[in-house]
Amino acid sequence: MTLTVNNLIIWMAKFADKIAVNKQFLSDLDTPIGDSDHGFNMDRGMQAIMTKLKTEPASLPETFKVIAMTLISTVGGASGPLYGTAFLEMAKKSSTTTDLVDLLTAALNGIEKRGGAEPGDKTMVDVWQAVIPEIKAHTLTENKIASAVEATKDLVAKKGRASYLGERAKGHVDPGAQSSAYLFTALLETEGL
Ligand code: ADP
Ligand code: MG
Ligand code: MG
Image (cartoon, rainbow, N blue to C red; front, side):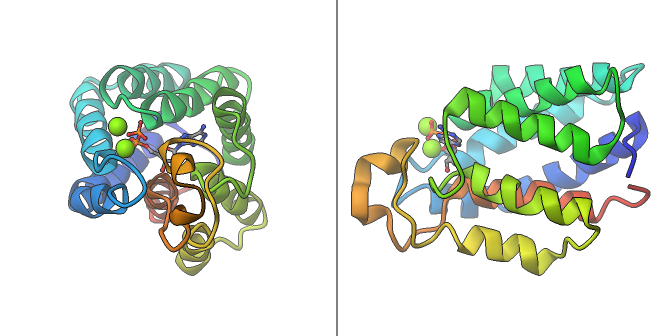
């Protein structure tokens, strides 16, 4: 499970496609417990990334950096800086390793440090922390990703806009958990990893 410039770009293209197809759905998830923009935020960022990646960066750290900077500058909201931090941490880590699990672990640590969320707080962190050990064990499936998203449904949110709702956030899946699920489904579909 080694990342290269080539398979990273394939992974991002698949992620961008899933976000584009599901942008309305993601924003609908963000309606009862947020401000209805998550899918549109992410789609704007991923489209910008795919345009930038047409000029292929020279190295893995450079590729991660282009992705990170574009997420930070175009997505906005809470998710832009958080996904941006994830990719920035992978940019840093990729100067010393190309191992996917090491890179994803650095990314998750960055998200947790930046946003202060812990597993169980009903955020994207819930999906990242459930999925990384499964990738490590070569046991990740689409169903396991879906279960991690579903597990956010009955939680009370401790971070982000949904936390303003208290108990009323219960019964709604977290939109950032769902977009992270697309990231990891895209990874599963990326051959050669
Ligand atoms: P905003 O809430 O600013 O409109 P988005 O709608 O794009 O931003 O993203 C919302 C998602 O960001 C949430 O569903 C959640 O998964 C994630 N999120 C928000 N705050 C945090 C945080 N502190 N740590 C981790 N993830 C967070
Ligand atoms: Mg929102
Ligand atoms: Mg917003």
